[in-house]
Length: 523
Image 1 (tube, rainbow, N blue to C red):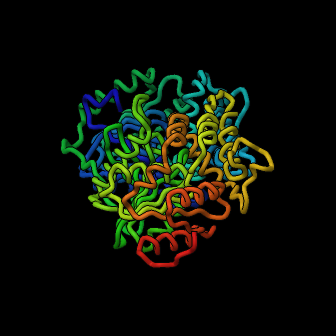
Image 2 (cartoon, rainbow, N blue to C red; image 1 turned 60 degrees about the vertical axis):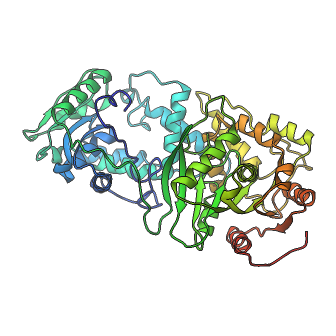
């Protein structure tokens, strides 16, 4: 994309179920074809106002590019398919029998090591589960940092990875090439394990050229020249998106330090609720609250700077300063003049800091699990809360992140595994919940140490004492920050309420507070 940006408008959509795109369905057993994916991608082109475009694809993307041209020739001005699969039935049966194990979280985090090893072996064998000499691929395995990037893409898809791979392998690649109307080059680099499939192309249409290519750099250069000969429409695409009825809305907002990822549902009536996750969290970690609030209020959640899918921060930018700018940019984009806010743990501190700087934007705040700490506690947490975990070639670092995320529900602080540090109530260590937290920690790793130091050092009590917005402090019985929250309520003479453990009940209670319904409990 960067190499071609000076000659083309380059667009790379996430397929349904991958990256940040919603899946067709939650079950990885869902059987779809590349034609199903192609239909959605063509609809995406229509939605952003691109009448036609050339299509480049590598491996699965190569089949996808051909499927799009086959589905709607008028939309695809040219195809360059780099690495193309054409399987015979026996080969397809063998690959599908071993290529697509379920990906499901296990209590011990072993699914993460399985995923890492599977991705590693995909670079060593084809197919990855066939570990014989004749299946060996001649190539150098990339650095741990590159493997980590690939692992994160796999984790974004989760079990839905099987839907995409199944569709790609099941695609009858030779058939659409016989009638393809768009100019196409079907190729593979000379060292690509898939280059052997090119000889299986029979009776291609006059528009299709089939040949083994050179290096990746040579193939990409050829693709660019080919696209210049067969340009798509020259109308600039629409860069904005719109909500879809009945669905939470994924979009991005630009602010001074990059792009912010946002999830929102603006359909309900009333003052919007802004949800702010804690340090090391993401929109996914607060998704249950977003779903609970959206039944009767507009609701907005964002990935804080350096968290989730929001861009990282330059070293010279303070975390809370960036959070304030991010929140302001999101509210401005949505044309929201005033919100009610809910923040949990570090998110409560972020929300309090933002409300103190922009008092006109916040009507009421509900802060849960407030981290009102003594100086010694704050210093210790700042030093230990977010350890720097080195990425290893064997993937063992993933288990470290898993254990940190799991311990956060078992001990407070998480790194003190003593009886005195054991949390009360239900520990919430279900594998699915811990997996979401682990993924959020992985995404925030670069910014988390600095963010934690700033959050724990923040003068929260003084800010709460000067707060102009309506203020409620709350915590559930199992929240390890409940004593700190009660202490903050006493120090600031603020109303305190105990939250129920059930998230839907929590949202109902907080909505009553936002709406002014009185159900007072004594401090």
